[in-house]
Amino acid sequence: MSGHGFHVHGPHDHEIEHAAQHGGDSFTSRIAVTTAILSTVGAIFGYMGGHTQNAALLYKNEAAIQKTSASNQWNYYQAKSNKQNLAELSITLTSGEVQERYKKEVERYKEEKKEIKAEADKLEATAKEFDKKSEQEMHVHERWALATTLLQIAIALSAIALLTKKRWLLGAVYGASALGVAVGIMGYLHL
Image 1 (cartoon, helix red, strand yellow):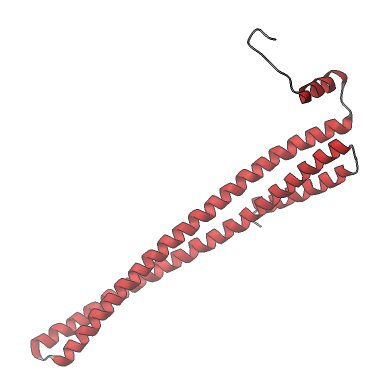
Image 2 (cartoon, helix red, strand yellow):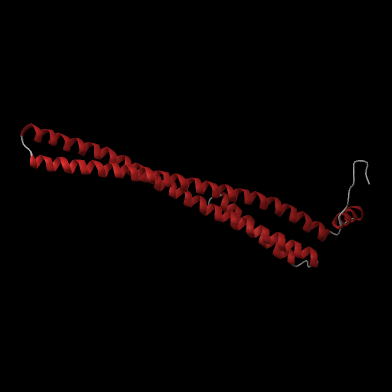
């Protein structure tokens, strides 16, 4: 018991202390270091996977907002078309000054519709850009997720190798690790 309270050692603590005092074998040390490195790299890959997934969701959300805005513009365009149609009908039903007023309204509606259409087209193009960015981020996210999974497999294999003392399993650990790092690099390079 220490002067600061109780301190209870778990069974694994004794093994670690024993290995530290008497020197562990190189196989165990190599697996321990490899596992620590894999865990660190896996944590980084997991963070990057979450980051790219969030970015993809934000882009998809922005695309939806732009699509809604474009839809609103198209509804506005349709309302102007309806008014233009009524004004055109009024031209055929009237004469004189009233008819001239409706002709001017038809021309005004045509000009307004051009502006509205241009804005709606612009919003639709922006929505497509955000959709494309979202798809690209999801592709990268899939790379990070696969890389993280491969590193988790490598960590599990290293635990099995440590428990069974099978040195040949290190080849599988290093193979899964190499694949995981390669896929992580592909994610980093956005491939």
